[in-house]
Figure 1: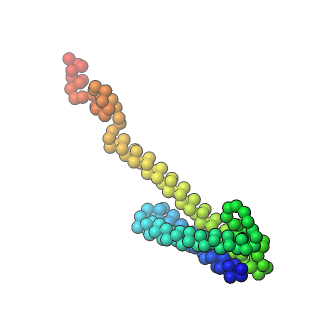
Figure 2: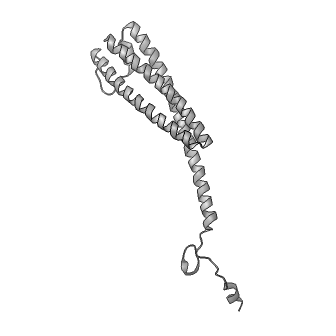
Figure 3: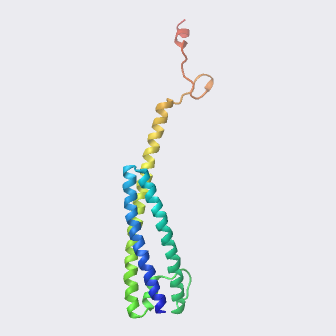
Length: 168
């Protein structure tokens, strides 16, 4: 069991570091969006994809380790095993280590999640502004939509010579 606990602490520690790196990448991503630096944004998105893949791999290992430890400790039940449940049943030296790394991981996840949400809102707002600008440009370039002769959209409402014909 101590080997499994040791590996679990190691996995949680790696996850906490990766989430810290992710938070840092999300800051750089926001800067790239703010400055409209598309090459930098592409670079950050690629790095984020790689890091997210590493986190997913560790998360799978964490879930398997936690399930095995829970089974060894007699924690049966439905759904995923919570680290806090393992902390409560772990021997004294391991419980403290698990709790400490769990808290670091939780803080890192919250920080990355906040930055990701902030970036999402920033991107959505930017897209709304750009959509509005494009709609305005479309009406400026195309002119206002009007019904003209024969009820056709976009045809001029008055053709050259109409005033002359009306005056005669």
